[in-house]
Image (cartoon, one colour):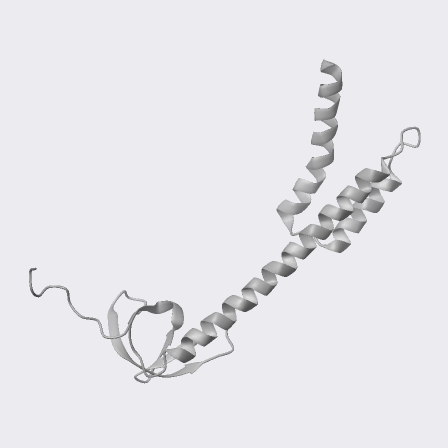
Length: 147
């Protein structure tokens, strides 16, 4: 029983090591997966061929990874569209933003530049990234009445 678990652990480590080194250098794509699959078939031991269900399982897992990648790309498009909509909705609004030196400024958004991953706002003649905006609307100080 011990030798079986030791063999399984050794074969599992041997089968995951090439994949781990490939993933470390770059992302796996369908071409890489197919090359690995062909190499695995080419160099298998003819006296103990690989299990066909294992190949089917690996193919199904790769299909799931591809779908998750496509879903991630779609999520990024939704996020970009949301940022674009947010930037357009800020036109005419008073906003506060922080510049690269850490100084806070306030002004009115007069326009927006779309098409980038992060839209830019035109605020009183200055171009500011939407990510630099820290507040929207009239900012009032909280140091007044002490109720």
